[in-house]
Image (tube, rainbow, N blue to C red; front, side, top):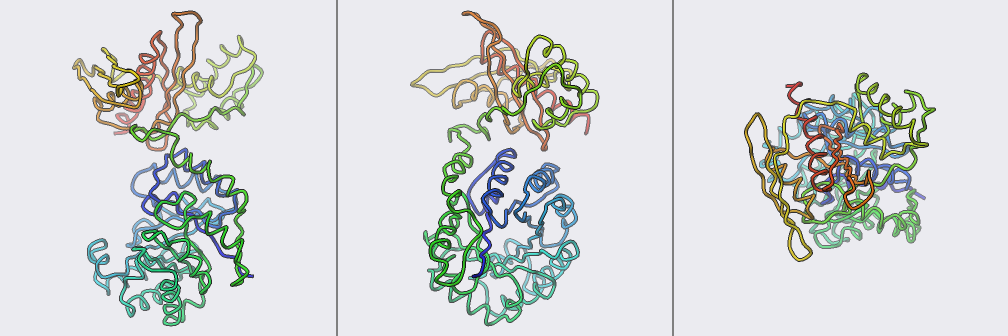
Amino acid sequence: MKTILLSDVTMKGEKSGVSLSFREKIELAKMLDRLGVSVIELEGVSENKADALRVKSIASAVKQSCVAVPVTLDAGNVNAVWAALAEAKTPRLQVPAAMSPVQMEYIYHKKPAAMLEAIKETVAACREKTENVEFVAEDATRADAAFLAEALTAAVEAGAATVTLCDAAGAMLPEEFAAFLEETVNAVPALHNVNLGVYCANTLAMADACAVAAVARGAAEVKAGAYAAETASLQNVARLLSSRGEAFGADTQVHTYELGRASEQIARLCNGGKNRHSLFDTAAREADAQITLTVHDGPEAVTAAVKSLGYDLSEEDGAAVYAEFRKIAARKEQIDARELDAIVAAAAMQTPPTYTLVSYLVNNGNIITSMAAVKLAKDGKETEGVSLGDGPIDASFLAVEQVTGSHYELDDFQIRAVTEGKEAMGETVVRLRSGGKLYSGRGISTDIVGASILAYLNALNKIVYEEAADA
């Protein structure tokens, strides 16, 4: 019985149609790892430090699955990708390349001869880093047969251990794709010595059937999505192989029963639990209930708990957070994750305010779309932003973005009362992520919208201050 590798492409936005935040990608990767998915594919690494941090964080969080990341075809970022991926238990470098004349010309701006040289150079550069190199023939079904054979042979000779043939157009029926796979293998003897993978777009809603038909003709790896929109469904392919794989001597290591139970959770995660009218990336996260601190905990325990929340504090900020923690812990039996968040927001990285709140006006109701007008002051100049949103707080944050001209991922948003009665004070904590780093802000007011805007500005000012210092 041959074990078929299932490679999840959910976190490759262009293949899955899914856009996930930094936190959601780490959560999904951990879930896929537990479900026994063979390979978890990520987006590539650009010049942005956040990309490298994303890959490095996911690579260290995955304990069993292989983690695959693509490199650019000119081999220019192989070192950068490998530096971020090397900590993975089983790292894989991917070399994607267009095979059809149209995509070679208009996407890669290369003629066939130049494309072959780029493939050889890039695969060889990856092979120097790891034996686990995958060559991805992105639109193999639309390629000239002779050129495709030459490119696949060149990739294998340069060191590719896995070769994936893609029907990027999704125009083939199952038997047609299976026949194409068989013909290609017969035309390229080198493919008998590598792991053969397939990817099928779901244009005709036949991706699942095409993938299984390919397995029946010798494919050993299938790219699919745990939350499939534009490709084969991981759950469907796993269930088909589990139920009928014996017909062609194949099975899978994916825990199909657990995957079925987790499918709704994955769908919620990929939908973000958010209204499609909102421009924000994430909904508020669930409380980190596992964190419980007392006055008896020392600086090391508090620092570890703060780090588990995602913060990377300097020694000075860490000391300030611990001092504030001691004051509050002396009056309370326990400090949980949300309270620790508020402490970090209040004590860490206090900076001079670049933006200050002048005024705000919110129009909200159950039969109208929320609208907010927020006026901010910077260097003595006042600027107003006006925006619609999914509720008054969302509209207010978007209005602030309009003034600043910058968008940052909303990692978390918390609200709680700090006093009692009709005029109770409300406290909000906002966590923004910029460049892979967390910044938290805290606001207190009898008006919860005002408190939210103050907390957002508090976090925003920390980002602006640090960006100016690094410039």
